[in-house]
Length: 405
Image (cartoon, rainbow, N blue to C red; front, side, top):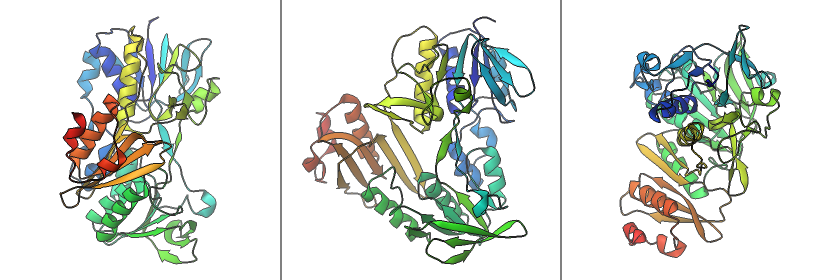
């Protein structure tokens, strides 16, 4: 078993690595180690169609159980890892057993930030949303008429708000920053998304934090907000970001900086160990960033698979993201890090618009709201490195396809 690849983490990135290696006809033994008791599955639908009851869990599985045996992938479920011993090249499990590796891949993802117990974070009825167990617990609470408080106006919080309103809950969302999506999107995007939610009946309070949650017999009953108001609540969803699961790497002496630092080939500071997905920190235009998306998890894992199989191509991220809220599809191409100019482009179709991001006059990203044409065109322009004139793109009469000429 000298050539064994061990993958810690059976989420999107870990599964994609194993699947791509087999697609590349790489026959080395693979052991995929996961914490959860279920086979690897898609996470994005958990907080949408699965929570709504529109999709059974079996439809979320990447592959049926038989695939793993047929493809020589040993999968160990409900198997937390205790430590990595780089000198012995073994992964130590909490049950006391060990797995030897020649190559190791860390795809441990990230963990949602939780509220401190001192302000009520440990009360019953307070939830985060990351995995199947979270969705299953939350599903029992999502009843029509229940009063839901969402803490955090990022994509996780807003998607939860959309699902809750569809299920008939009374939804209040608070955001400490001066607007929703402050960290990830332009003001124009935030304005459009806010208007959509308010039209659906979500009460959004910006520049508003949480002072404390108030419980009764261990169950959340109310929330005191930073403006002094106290509101009654039946449940709370916390969406205030995630923490990369880099403890194993740090304890093993690998370089970590709010995530596991990797080079252009996905290698950590130990050349026998790779890292990918939400737990990995990579270079983006001279900045060290974590790209938290399904797309990056898959693309990076597949690029690393090619390297492990003997290739030598570096991974060059081509980010794209999406968010479904009500009947609205927000599609994002590129990465708006460091933008200094935005241009709003109104579509000739009602309810469709796009926001184009520029840095020092160079087009770097686009947010498309119910505007697939803007998304597809922007994504292609970024891939080709084509220039975009900020003045011209604002003109709704401009045919986007002319930019590809």
